[in-house]
Amino acid sequence: MKNSIVAILALLSPVSANSATIVLDFEEYADSVSLFQPVTLGTVLSDEFEVIGLTSLVGWDNCKTGPCPPPSPEGTFVSAVLANADASIEIGRIDGNAFDLVSLQHLTGVSGNYGFTIVGNLSSGGTVSQSFTVFEDFSGYDTTVLDSALFSGITSYSIELDSGAAGGFWIDNMVVTTVPIPAAVWLFGSALIGLGAFRRRKFAL
Image 1 (cartoon, one colour):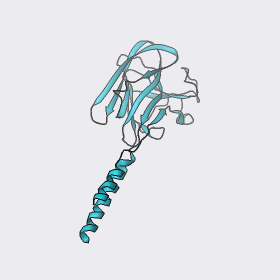
Image 2: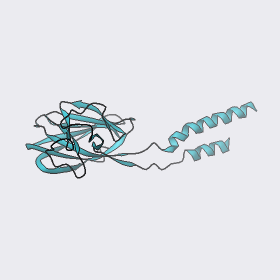
Image 3: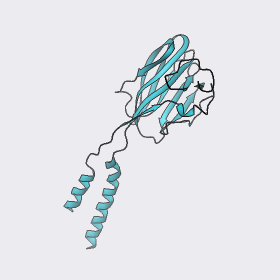
Image 4: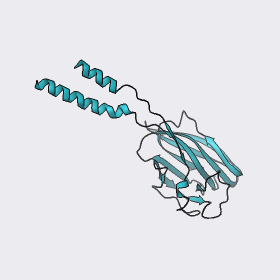
């Protein structure tokens, strides 16, 4: 029995789980969506994420299939556009597991400046948010880095324009990090099953 317990503890010892960085950049749709075609619920991004919420008008801006007003980040063709006030898009991990939101790129070509808010849904319950002010700048995309203390361990996030925004807010290259479930978690069940089999065999003897 003692040897079995030692074996179980060995299985449950920490197992390294390296995080993976994923850039959600919409490029997989460069050949299938047209300029200003509406983004739809269930749109899959980089195999692991999907669009799970939309309000108001959110569309594609595809520089590969039509004229593209903003200068896109180098090597990219497709962005999503929040086209009017109160527009929002929510993105989550398909398997429901938690991830960290690191940064995103954005551009506005509308005169004046206004705000947008990013809201994250925590895996532990509740929400976190961070607000930013957007200034008119049609010369290129800006990068916003999120507060890592806030946007760690979320299951989804939404990007929301303020009610006073005139629209024309492009988003692209959202950087997230994911951590695979440690192997020890998967081994835990096997270890318990093994212990149960050992106990039944001992009592049978």
